[in-house]
Image (cartoon, rainbow, N blue to C red; front, side, top):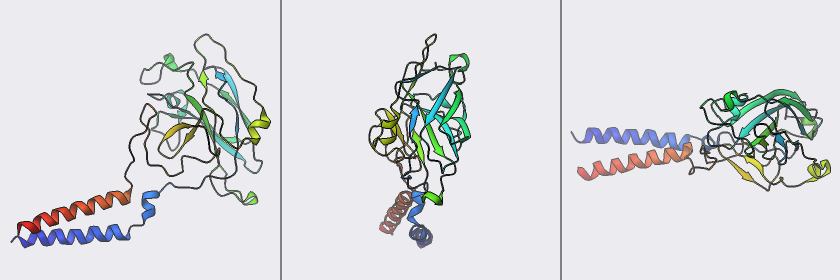
Length: 257
């Protein structure tokens, strides 16, 4: 009678083995994509800009005329997340408190007048005080119609502004002068620019402007304080562990016979 459970386990092992072997490795790399070589760079907000809630701020960026429309998002690297509550939920990051939509389907003409909302009661929905005077916010821009055969582009085009702060209560805003020639000719990211990958956000100072987009491969998840947890297992890794566990159980039963 001992052979019956052992036979069943062997059948289960065969099934698991076939699932593991015939499942493409690409499953563990879903949401991968090559960032575009084309780049639209932010002019404002810059790291010296101070924005005022309740006022209008002009977001500016360099343009590639072949692209027609862009989406603008507000992101933050705080402990509790404020961008989601200050604006509207981001798609497909609706549950992320760190992302809020500023505007979608914006004509790619190099500027957008952003009427900045005022945080209700000076807090987010969880009741935490809205951070002011802290460079913990940035704007993300991505091209909606990035597939353009006329310039040979089929990859996502994303840009990230430098970190900026919102003015403290009663203080005025600041818009610093930016050398446009430096912005358009720079080969590296400005200091304090935030770079995003698919599952982690962190500060960086080098690389291409669209070089690390959230569609790039990544294996770390952002903690609420902006740090990253340990690597996350992909589908293939989980299958390996499951197969290994089955082998261990099979060996234990075999020794008991």
